[in-house]
Image 1 (cartoon, one colour):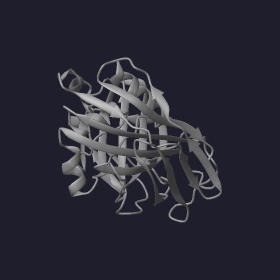
Image 2: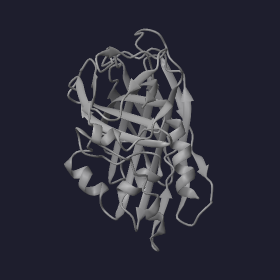
Image 3: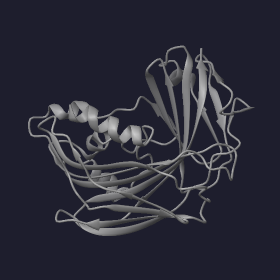
Image 4: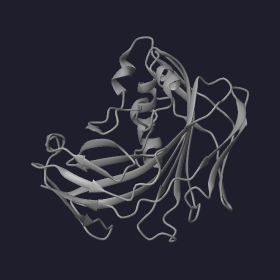
Length: 291
């Protein structure tokens, strides 16, 4: 069905990432409405502790939607993202798939023309792809792709997005300074490395620390174990304690995964869209063992 496909297409392009910061008070109110329009531009750059070493291609995605009969939060879920949530808290992420059952629910995915993404000397182009007509609720266009953007320098390099525009929506341009890489990540005091498995125990709190950088940013912690997922959102102040009560929702798994993202969200004005924002994330992924 459309909801599942939308999540797979955009979430796979973005490692399952979504909007994690508030979109400003006005935007948060608008996105909770049962009818409206929204636009999301997303970049996820997978990195490591080796600053200056280029990682795999960045994963890019975008979607612009006009909807009714369901909340903007649910639409974000359908597009592979996550609606803004509480800070310094953990919970099970929801995709909003159940909202498709509403009899008057509809989502029109809009075309904004080709989108050029530029950072430093690197540039990539996203073109609209037809969203397959698999269900009555959602149809239109989405954007997803990979790009080799090189070694991006925090706050020195700027991600610039320029949409050509189309008959449905006019073009726009927006720029967002790149957030910093995640370094000095430790789990219960032990330095976390991509080459080693991180150990997590469910019956006690787990302390995660990192080098905190910028109050504009937030940290997203995602634990995936035995097919279940736990999502925590924290301030970028250098530490967060995952409570044992939250970890208890996960099953034991020697092949679990810990995903840690530094996320920067910047709202922008786009003609014809109620709420629009850019989400840029720098991400590290660690193998984990949950017991």
